[in-house]
Image (cartoon, rainbow, N blue to C red; front, side):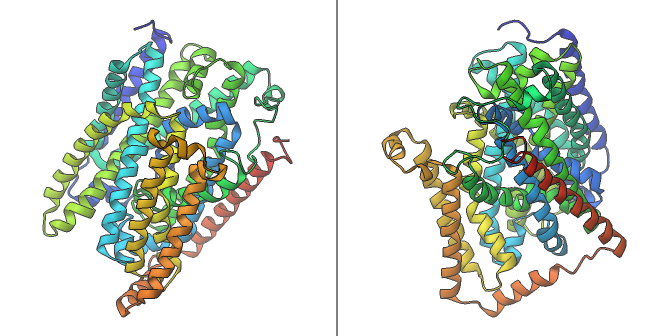
Amino acid sequence: MEALEISYIDVAIIISYFIGIVLLGVWISRHKIKGQEDFFLASRKMSWPLIGASLFSTNISSQQFVGQAGAAFAFGIIMGGFQIIGGICFILLAVFFLDVYRGLRLFTSPEFLERRFSPGCRSFASAVNVLMLMTATVSAALYAGATVLMTLLGWKGAGYMWAAVIVLGATTGIYTLLGGLRSVIYTDFVQNILLVLAGAVTLIVGIIKVGGISEVLAIKDAAGDSMWTLFKPASHTYGWLPMLTGAFILGIRAHCTDHDYVQRALAGQNLFHAKMGTIFAAFLKVVALFINAAPGIIAARLFPELDSGDKAYVTLLIDIMPVGLAGLCLAGLLAAIMSSVDSGLCAASSLITLDFVGKKMPNASDKFMLGVGRYIILILLIIAIIWAPFIQRFKGLYAYLVQIWALTSPPVFVCVVFGLFYKRSNARGAIATLIIGSCLSAGAFALLNVPALEDIRTNLPWYFQNSLNIGFIIALICSSVMLLVSHITGSTDEDLAKAEAIKQSRHIEPMSPRERRIYRATLGFVILVVVLVVIAFSPLGFGQ
């Protein structure tokens, strides 16, 4: 083990934060939890600031502060394009999805597929969602957190990686296990404030270190092109074509159907608070363009010798931040990490408890199901800790995450979108879509990663070597399967009745005229902000 990379004052600040956030979560958990709705949906009493902050904290985590900043280190602000797409998808969640989810009084997002199609579709989608949460949320957050701790403490080697993962997992698991979603949302709110402040301070100090905004905006990549454009050629890994197709599909699937996000909207005290919280999160996603991706570009200018982009953000904090401020910012980074871990654990546990155990044991008491949920959190935490160290075998954290998201998103994306907007889609079409789409996803993942397939992979046309493009192709195939099977088998009276019930659910929980005015004004403002930012980072603005 090498010497500490930060001062003991910074270490003290980080340790104090760890202790403080765990105590806060445990203190919140003192609230009497009587059953599943209390534990998994915070009694459906959350207000919009808490919902928005928790959505943002869940979404903006180590994947962004470590992985996305690391990718921006190599590719530029285009990596922040995922934040813009995510913000747009949160807007879509508020406008098109929440009326139905809230009207149906769902407990889990895959429950929608049972109400629209069949129990089998719900179970299939829930299993995929749990797999995503464990491989691309919880485990990835633990890996990124361990990477940060190892850098800070001068640790090297597999043994230290395991130790760091266990420390982070155990710390976050304590209050998640005790307090459920209520503890998660309140701790997320505190962590959201810290991570936004930390990101903003890092950006400001980085700009000063480089020499001012004009010097920062003049940063070029190895090819001499601006690193401040959201528009790259179609053949680029994150070019305009894969971003407008595959990235939007994974964005809608994640932000509009994943239970770790939908769970927070379902916890809102009414539709107004659910929608406003989601719009608030969309605005914060635009802010994330500046506090996540931009620091990676600054690090590329200051530390071009780094061997791994995943070290960019933490290196920036260690090298340019004054004593005390570095500890605060690093605590913000750890806040983001812990937020993803607690959110993923709570969401995955609710899916398994309600979508699998609850269906097998419909008459089980709330007390029994509550105990099951807590045991499942513990089991999931252990699984995530075991898997996390293996992520280092992939070529960068964000590349790993984008590949997982892009390839597993299409089947569920197609089923939910068709279920909402196409009346003649039926259960047989949905289950065929899920099965065929999942097989295609698994095959594509093997093609892109299995060493034995290296020769085939390298001889593919450029379009098919990009996981975002492959995800789009799988989505097109899944859409064709849904249409073909649904039309061949035809819609029964039950299928049509389910489709009509979905349509009517949009009107079950209306907003008051005043709430509607506030919501529409806020929605218009956030859409305007998104448009202005996209123009600013285009060839018409800073990206020229």
